[in-house]
Image (cartoon, rainbow, N blue to C red; front, side, top):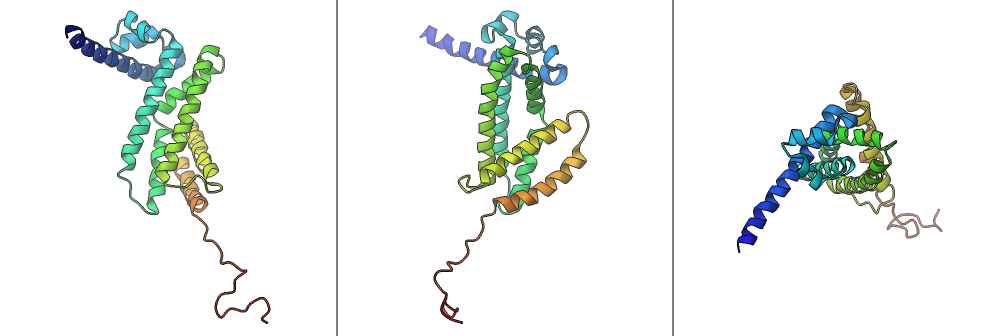
Length: 221
């Protein structure tokens, strides 16, 4: 009984330590970039001993990829919660795109960009980041489909959703150095109209092989 009673607090402390390390890592990536984010700096910011940090995340690559994965999961859950308050009808698409656009200018996106650039020349980081980004990309795509309430089995829907995410990612990069909000708003206004047209099911034309009542058949003048 004593062993069980002490195990739970230990597990809770361990989870709390991990959470502090992951939050501190993202903050450091946003504030100091990849080169300024060292495991020593992260541990100090999190108020965690160096030994505890190494116990949970023995390498810098393991620490930063875990931090991005943690924040991606948290942001996806926040998007789902925010989407519950969205209205149904034609205005929903506009609001969904606005929510997603905000996600591509937030701390997660900035931290991820730092890792993408660093991974180009860091083999260890690239090995850890590529599968993570593939998973995050799939989850973001599925989330977007769900938020828009569209059927991905329809021709062109998958491509339209992916084009939307690619556009938002590019606009997020453009906004990194300068405030690009005015141009982004104008572009998104245009894309929302185009996307609505792409995602709206076309009405099936009547079967021309069966004449309607009162309509001239193939043998009528």
